Amino acid sequence: MQRDRRFVARHSAPSRTLRTRSVVTLAVAATGLATAVWLPTRFDRADAAQSTPTLVPVFADEFDGARGDDPDAAKWSADGQGVRLDGDGNVAIFARPGRRDRSADAGVQTKQTFQAAAGKVEARVRVADGESVRSVFRMLGADDSRLDVMDNRGNRSKVLRGSFGADVDGQLESEHSLAADFHSYAVTWSFGEVIWTIDDREFLRTKTDLDEPFAVALEVTAGEVDRDRTARRMLVDFVRVSTAAPEEEEPPASEEPSAPPAEEPPAEEPPAEQPPAEQPPAEQPPAAEAWEPFHLYTAGTKVEFKGVTYEVLSTHTSLPGWEPTAIPELFKAQ
Image 1 (cartoon, rainbow, N blue to C red):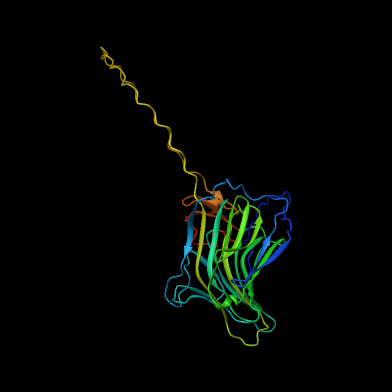
Image 2 (cartoon, rainbow, N blue to C red):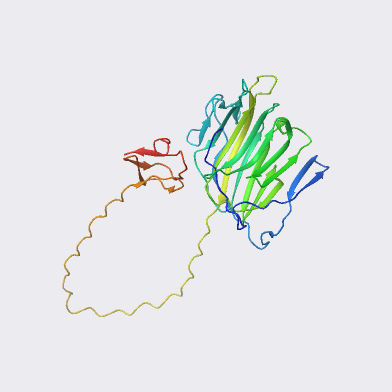
């Protein structure tokens, strides 16, 4: 899939790139898994006394629907022809090996963007199987940066990779192919730390802040080297996004009841009637502002684009390519 909407992370280090750390591979005999762990260098773990934020669901799709239906158009943008519900509570993403040195891909991306200092992105996926196939579950943002929650390639079907940019990369190797069954892949972030997991088992951790808007995408790419031309299929059972709940304000301290004021004797003469106050002029509605990317628009506000005024239908953070003329689900011409 060709996209430019990718997100930028703000790192705790002064530079714009993360510092590379050593990778240690540990064998786990009971499960046949090996875990790649990032060793901390000059960074310390988050203060143990710091409370874990409460996460609340802000997006979910269980892909219920009839076999052959498209995924919910209010939630997803589909890329390619091979994206359909399978009738068993999954969305199937197909890609057929390419011809004449060409690859083929298909996938989906959320129309909604998400932004929070703490949160979790999770999907339950059965990756595609095939010699040159690649299955990816990632977070996309605005400035040519991406975070891969899960990256699996058919010629190394037992290996799960997670990455963020060029300097954060870890992998886990399973005893069996990841295409043999469904697994839950997730990224959780809070207090400047990001953690990758598979089936609630951590395999990668790094220090950085994810506080820029991002979209969620899943895609399959099939290369040209497969011996057969069977379509490669990735199944997605659900996608969920949760973010930190807003902090609750403490109620004001209760005040002691005071004694009722003493009754005043009635005035001898009623006060003179005051002339009615002049009504302030009615407020004029704000003028429509010019549409621009990377701006939070709330539902009901007005924007102007190429001389036409549009009403925002759904609260979102704009990204390049999301102009009012391109996304009619988000804007309505006035």
